[in-house]
Image (cartoon, rainbow, N blue to C red; front, side, top):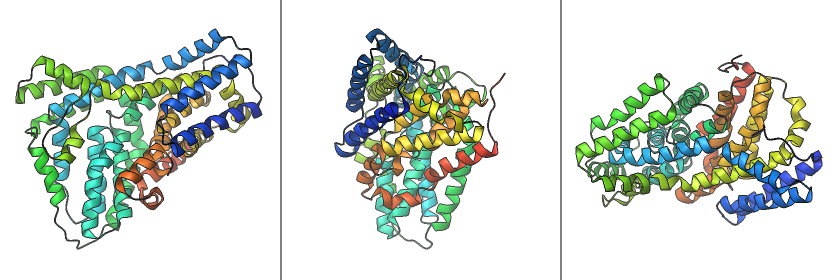
Length: 460
């Protein structure tokens, strides 16, 4: 998006005022009015158009900037449609239910917090949604922790950490696809590169949760058993339903394009569903568009498995396009360029650029409370800066997730923070000190940035 030429040249103070106004509008709308981000962003776009006209920027130039901004996300949008199809096909084929079921087999009183973290990670990777993981298995684990009379704060921290590890590393996740798509990096190359910071964060977190876990805890695991029975009642739990995951890994190793990989494993999911129980083609098309609907009778299992479909991605796609349109206007009006020009002197090395991007991601999350915007704005603002210091785009996409995706649940007034606090019935500030994985993300990405380790240089 930085390639969009500025049609006006506002002073730094003027540009800063506009940015602060945008932050105030978003914070008030999301934090106070509890609104979804779509309408506030739409209103901000309208205000930016009015500002541009007052600055005597022709409307056709503003319109061109909006189109250029939105077009930057078309690659990600197409992948989002495939993700919706993939989720529904993997549920009806049994891949996601089987993966979750095997995860529940590991539950035991020993190392409870570590197991909670591990299972939420598995479920998060399986469904590609941190909030779904928190609202289903997360709630179950909070109930188990209450029955065991052990720390609800640490349990919640382990749930959130695991859910956001899964969300961050899942090819089904919208934030993962958004981060890679924003800077033009292959999805699976992006996931692979995130491993340099994510795997150490996972390992450290797992050890800390294991150390903190109580010993000698005794409770009945009725809730877990109910989940397992509910999953078994679907008739979808079979070892061979994990075949699409094997194919996914193989195609990733051989660096097949993300779209082709997603299409192949989606077809495999539909094939597995047909093998287990022949389905009319009309029903297959309906599930792929509207999503899979579970009717086991177990409301928790049904909530976990009722998801997917192209239509489930429409709200995300709308938000992405609106945010990118807003970004296009900010660049067309020269607002972002004016601010970056003021601070550009600080970004002379790889470490400083990575630190700046990380602070930006954390700042947008903290001030606006919106996860997608933290990814989009950080990516678009720092794309050129990373190139100037010779860093490949996948370094930026990693930072966008390390300091963007996983920070949102730590902000009490953010979308994720408010949702998690409500669902788990525990304040954000109470579980925040125990979300080890989320806290380690920004720290490790900055440390690696200054050390120069795991960074990929631009190919000349």
